[in-house]
Amino acid sequence: MLEKNKVFGELGVLNNQSRTSNVKSMTKVELLKISEKVMQKMMSESNLFIQG
Image (tube, rainbow, N blue to C red):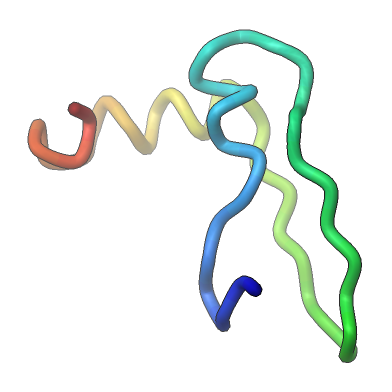
């Protein structure tokens, strides 16, 4: 179960592969779709420990 502010589907973007995650909401949710370009920018600007 994912909690508030958790991420899913990021490995597909990072590995340049089709998405491997499926999610079914049990309550109302708000989603933020992040493009590969934005994800790569966020990763390049993040701490090296997080990038690893």
